[in-house]
Amino acid sequence: MLAQLLLLASIAVPVSQDEGVVETTYPGGAVQERFEVDDEGRKEGKYERFREDGTVEVTASYEKDRLHGRFAEFGESGELVLEALYGSGERNGYWRTFEGGVRTLNATYKNDLLHGRWESSTADEAHVVRAKYVRGVLDGKFEEERPVEKWKRSATYRKGLLEGKAKISIANKTVSTRKWSKGLLVELDGREPYPMQLDALRAELAEARVVAEAHPADPLSEDREYALMRLKTYRALCRLAWREMSLVPEWNDLCDAASEVCEANGELDHTPDQPDGFDDDRFQEGYEGASHSNLANGGLARSVDMYMDDSDPSNIDRVGHRRWCLNPSMRKTGFGASGKWAAMWSMDGSGPGARGRSAVLYPPAGFVPVDLFGPRHAWSIQLLTGKSPASDDDIQVEIVTLDEHYQPSSAPLELDYCAKGGGTYGGGPCVIFRPVGLVVRPGARYGAKVSFDGGKSIAFDYLVEFVAVPKNEGQR
Image 1 (cartoon, helix red, strand yellow):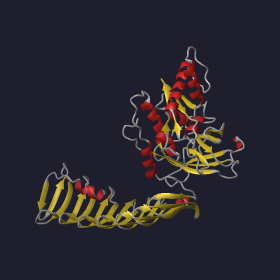
Image 2 (cartoon, one colour):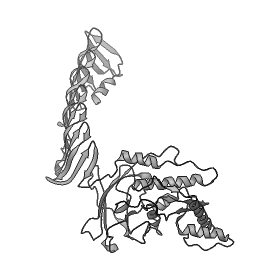
Image 3 (cartoon, helix red, strand yellow):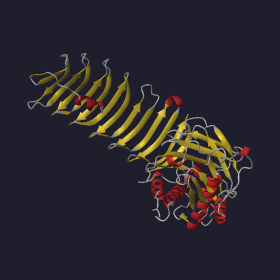
Image 4 (cartoon, one colour):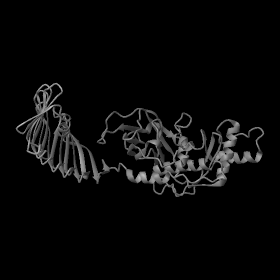
């Protein structure tokens, strides 16, 4: 605290001592400190610290070289800015701060730890906090108010962690309810904000981000395994089956052939023409691979990230590559490449399927690592069951920035795309929308509400919070 730092900053220039009183001075000769000492030269009794202009900065008392008793700090105009009690060098008793004669903090310490009631306020009382500490940690009822706005937040802490029911009210009307368990938000306005808590998500993603060892006989093996890792990671994020995902060597070869055909033609085409002089058998393999695969031009290693983006003008109307990557029924795949041209075998249905899920969201509800989503990525809701909107006009989407209290802090973000996606890639129809001005950084938090009937009812109401999740060692 400031009080302790001030006393440690003393610089003794010339020193005078007379009958148990010591004075230190500034280089110009003005008294800097004056304090009493005992026979052993330890501070004992009254202590004063002065500014160079002679005004009092600190008054205190010592016992055996340790602060003991009342401590006070004063502003340049002589006003009290801090008042506290010490005992044997530790804070014991009240701790008060002042601004312009108004008390801004009233707290209590015991054995140098906050213990008891805490009341803080800005000088204009625009922000007020009331709490209770036990042995240095918050424990008990907590209230935060902004009286001018008639805004109030109430909660309860147990051993330093939020616990139990909490609410926010405006003008005595509850506008938000939430429930905490050991510091984790488990319910927000009647919904589960985080389907997977951050520690659990980090652990699962760390498992998914492991790149298998390359096969020396296959020159593309390292990139194939890296692409598979990225696919597993996205599926783990979206809470889809991923642990049994594997590469099929025959499909790898067909994807290699598809990439070779695309490279020879100089274009991505799921139903390509045979390039001049291209081997007939290899072309048939390439055609089969291309007609069953996602295709990309940008390198095999980063191809899955390109498929999951899928928000360029030629793909945003369906995000088909993404939907194949997030197909709940996928268990096996293949990856191939020729130069920068790449292919991913997409049409596998040997996996477990949806298992009761109604939709696949990207970004999903809850925590989303910043390396798995971009500010210009389209949002998508891939519908697996239930009704889809009859037309684009029936789709209404509201995405708002949320503050530290999970409350809207701005008007809804503008959308530059909002429509029903074409086709049934990866199972079921899809709704696609993209907000303008989205910020993807750790701590950025958004609330999304989606209606399929023109706003009469809410089909999806969820929270997305961007976080940093460390990459595994050796990951690109």
